[in-house]
Amino acid sequence: MKLLDQKTALITGASRGIGRGIAMTFAQHGCHVAFTYSRSIEAAQALEKDLQALGVEAKGYQSDAADFDAAQELVDQVLKDFQTIDVLINNAGITKDNLLMRMGESDFDSVININLKSVFNMTKAVQRCFLKQRKGSLIHMSSVVGVKGNAGQANYAASKAGIIGFSKSVALELGSRNIRSNVIAPGFIETEMTEKLAEDVVQGWREGIPLKRGGQPEDVANACVFLASDLSTYITGQVLHVDGGMLT
Image (cartoon, rainbow, N blue to C red; front, side):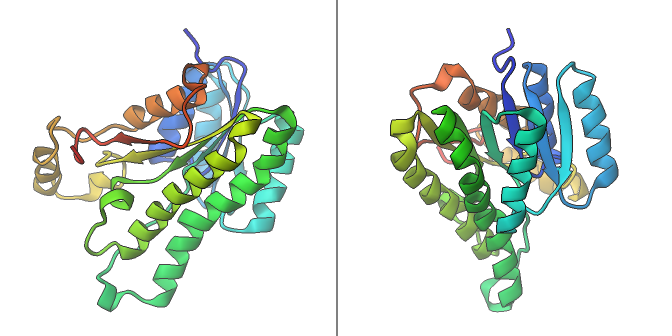
């Protein structure tokens, strides 16, 4: 059963990791996919081909979601290419970890801009389309760190906590127009980034999780499918934890 058949999703930061997993899973459910990337041109081209091989329309756009004007231009171009947008997934994000006493202003500002301001930029840009069609699903990628905090990640935690407050406010503002806004808070997800960690470090993380394993990008993607599909039409303003029970 293709839960997203003939829908169109715009996914930011999708050339690798969780974003790539979401794009592939959405295509498997019949969703047309527009996605953004920053520098990974080859990875983006490969993803575009993999998505198209699944029988859906797909196109990658090199765009900076942290740039307000660029976000609006991106949405305008996607609407020209795909005619509609039904789902926006704000997934673009970075980390610049350090203890507060060593964290520079630029490291704080860049994380806030890319992780949080991009969510404002992209949501603002698609809002007009969603209001016009009187429907739409906004899915914002937060983190378990945005809920409980983490030493050495004050900037990242602040950006991800901000996403939760932003999403809940948008849900209240746009609910009467049948526009839903929800957050996914992943825990320890095993991607290309975690492959660079020592195996004993990764295993230590796994042991601290009730399900005794790290999550896969597909675990997050499946939660996104639910929130993007008509199975969740009465769900808005929520935070869905995809963390194997880390916060239980």
